[in-house]
Image 1 (cartoon, rainbow, N blue to C red):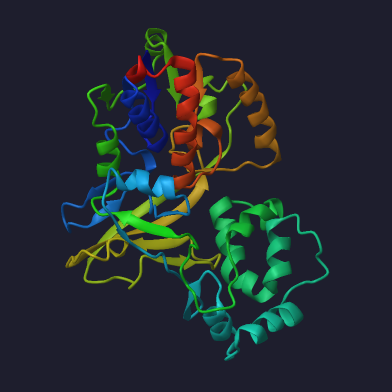
Image 2 (cartoon, rainbow, N blue to C red; image 1 turned 30 degrees about the vertical axis):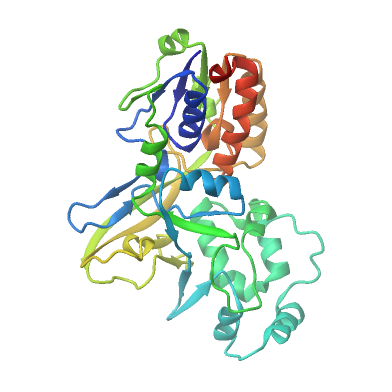
Length: 374
């Protein structure tokens, strides 16, 4: 079979590799000049720092098979994401933990006392079934912590009031009553030593895979393939005939400096009068390296326009209704499989993206055959 895979990100690379291993012929195209999609990393020629060009990506998972899979293509080194937040004239640790609580309220509470303090003096216990982001925050952390760490940041990130966002968004952010400031709880956490682009290049390095970069999709390409795997935006495949699905995009203000600019990889700015959401300092994402210079990004979130790179699906009521209509069109098209973050219009962590791609492989082999067993 001749497969056309549109998009050389994680979904396309994993599926391309596995189908190529099964003896199929794979053509991968990407409109950009590099593989790895938004995970793309490259060396800054000025400083030598390995830069996460489209913003930082930290690999974290509890999935042993996925962890083993990525380690087959790259050497992963330990990395723990420890986020800081500037609030007024002080710097705090995120996610909100016992240190954050004690520092913010000027106390020295132990875990049980801090838990009782939040529940009895801060949390809005009248909210029994939080429906919005704001209700979720007020119920579990209270007004003071919400206003300091979540409200302004969320308004800047999503471009709307937290009262309009679902509670599920905040459920991904933990509240800890110990001094653990590791942002993630997963068993396996790390960074590929040479970056994600090198890892994806290794995945696509197979005699049955032909990669074409700087190549935009055209309908004629689809006609020449036996089956197409589409990891681009779902609505773009249908030429936006029903309208555009909503996304947030990011603008990066890149700057370099000598030495260590902020002392950490990620510094959040929750205040609404600060226009950016955070500053990322990229050499801290590779703590095993030493560089005299440094590369930083100020991140600005805004609505995604037609020519922008889509980052975060909005998935509010109107978008979900439109998504249902596009999903119906997709299901009716037997010649195309829609995969990945953009192809399914969901926010997916990298490990989930890889897991879903691996889970699709048996379905493809059942349908199209495993040539290695013929």
